[in-house]
Image (tube, rainbow, N blue to C red; front, top):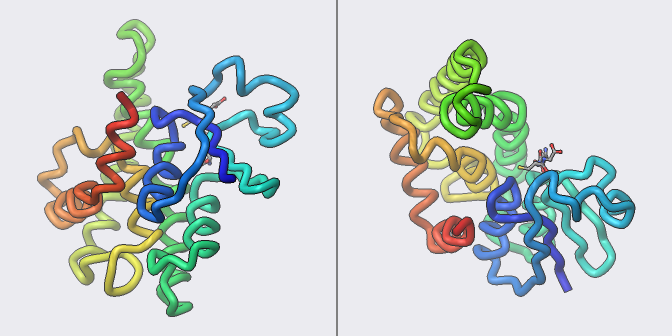
Length: 201
Ligand SMILES: N[C@@H](CCC(=O)N[C@@H](CS)C(=O)NCC(=O)O)C(=O)O
């Protein structure tokens, strides 16, 4: 049995989107980041970072959302893991790129513009985060001008990982990046994405 640790209101959203694409049955520990459950010695033994998501797939323990999605797609022989090694490498490239160039930046922007209580928001952090996001959207836009998808001729784990991480961009004005906006919509219009999104409540 596949067990997923983490709430849809966290980066576990990416895992839930993938299991939906694959049609897997699973058991979920619906735990929020930094919740008491994630601080126990039992959970720290699974994920010493104390973060979510983590999966336990019949005793195989794995963390890092991007790696989890590659593993699940490969294990279940999904076409979401491109068969062409070049396309697979591009899916990995974009996933790693997102982790470096957008993952924390877009969260920081959201935290310092709306998520944190007003008194704790820092406009300089929000601006610096936005400047980095904008540069990354430029990079995405250039790629999506050349190709409909990030890693080969069809939607793949590369698109899923980057689009899922851009959940917060769904409520941003991306008018300056029309290809990125259209691609994000194409990705999030998928039934598995909508189902995962609905789990956020
Ligand atoms: N690189 C990790 C990041 C995981 C991560 O930061 N998860 C957040 C929730 S979205 C968390 O558990 N934060 C708790 C903390 O920072 O203590 C991944 O992609 O899985």
